Image (cartoon, rainbow, N blue to C red; front, side, top):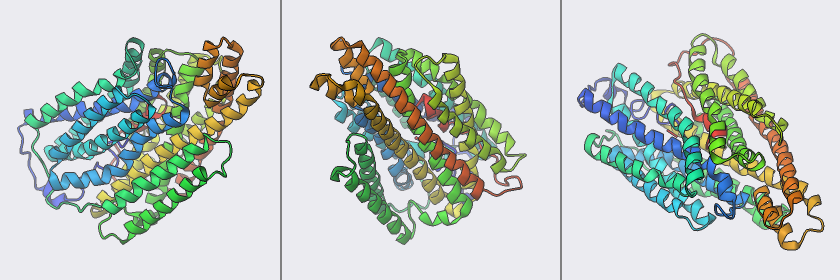
Length: 545
């Protein structure tokens, strides 16, 4: 989910610099602080939602305590949210410009609250996937409006101070989310992790109505329905094909290769259409700028790794190690703490050193920390896991903020809006692909590793155990087959090791891209980057403020 220092950071100020330079605060200072409080409440709400789902994945996979969801459906439950968010962000910003940011913000909160209620009482995994996609729509409507309202409310030094305060909401959400989810799952049913969103959204709606004017930009952007339709359909079909590949034994099946090919074709058409639009929501021409194209590619590869390893980590802690949801939530706190330290540390370093010198080593360490999961096992001491998570959060936090700030600040002001949309879409697309590909690798390797242990096992038991380690543990308990549960744990750990190697290699490719495309020397001349804690979604959570 996109953080404030990504695509909407310079919207609307970047697109209308004269309007903002000449503007003076129109709200009393006390009211400005109240507006900031409402925005922070909404930011924490979205971050909570991003972090709680990873803690709930193991429970959702359980046939008794959850929905008995298989890995493919859990991939969709996680990815549907990010997919909707990724493809609707630039459209949502244009809607705010046209109809007023408070109007769009309020609509987003209504959609988010309603879909959270739907998710809480979903009767099966398919309903949960649909509800999560609707929640992604709500978040996409909320996020650009949230930042636009902040930019319109504050000016001059007060704006910088407000952004600094606002950024703390991400850290709060990331740290509190897993623990809150663990508490709710230990004491209530799984739907409580979604139901908690409803009263918070209701309070935010009241605050918006009472405190926030309906700001709108003086020059509304045009909508891009063709681009939105092509991007949503292309990414959805491609993701379906990748996830389906992990559910079947033969990739030559039409329902595997046809969606993958169709998705790639639709995305190619999307790029061609955007190249012909006068004011595109997603401008592919920006990739012609070497640093911008390379930086975005590196961020996409990094977020690919973060999403993939996060998905695996949720099942490792609660499934293979048997942690309770609360213990798993507490175990993930070092990732958020690492990002909270890494982001401001990188902000200070890039004032003195070239961006490449700071971010290439950090991204390399991030990739190696993901590869470190290949050395985890069923008997790994918790302290070693915590060190790995802390290192991951620290290194990822040192990459995302500085690179994103440099990419946007390097663009001409008139291209900042389009550049922001590109950056957001690439980052979220990386997350969606990471969930799809990482989960698919896990499923394929687990199934192959499990086959020798299923010889002689009755047909129904064999089929259920083949689906996932969670299903295998459940059927092993109900049929009193402890050896089957041990075999499932071993197969899962083997799959984790293989997936970690692939994920690390892909993330390491991002470091290579940065090394090649970023300038070699000289300090960055753009504004000093602000902290960005999105990377802490990586092992503690799941694309946004």
